[in-house]
Length: 290
Image (cartoon, rainbow, N blue to C red):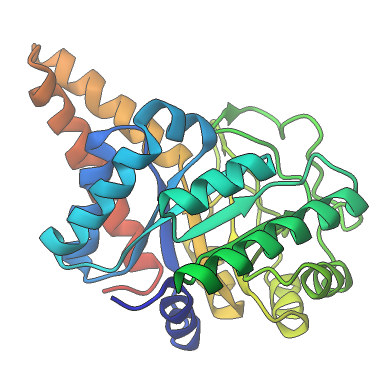
């Protein structure tokens, strides 16, 4: 199987994006694998710190390894939103293909300092083990968690002064040497209750791409207009994170199953799995995998 680095490079060169889907249970895992197999698309499974604790990171690593053989798909695992260097080290040692060190709650200087330490550790690990674990970092606050909101989450602003500038991106990537970079370009974690999420600044995305030597990652991929998403991918987005939409879909599937009188857990879960698979297939087609 190709490395995530090579797969991301090929995707961007062909104006496609890799779908990154967070999971919290087995039906979510199955849905990602089945959708990727059907669309013949590479995919990334994301696990936040909470998801890793609940599912067991070592267990999911083995599930991913087995699924690559079973489904014959390029399947990768990302330690999403990792908030400490200790957790970064644990994720790398467990066998993740990529780790997001999330320093958005830190000052600019501390984010750079801590990300550089993560970079040093991963470089040493890759050299010793012959691996190619990728490091991701973020600049710009876009909220946290999969939430449904009436108004933008507290602390999130979409004015020009709050979004990531090309100059900030260039400086951060040069200072830290990250492989993947997640900016604030109009994206928000979570979804509006009754309308589409804000427009992505595709011009800004293109400007950032021109300034950095790293693949661009879009967090908060739920609820974005399809045309706007296609334009963002054309501008250079290489990986798109989706979580909130899948959680909503899971809830709808569970409610439908209970509404039909299902009680057997595996039958209830099957409703949610099928609905999530349908959403993931639609997303992968949107990202260029037809």
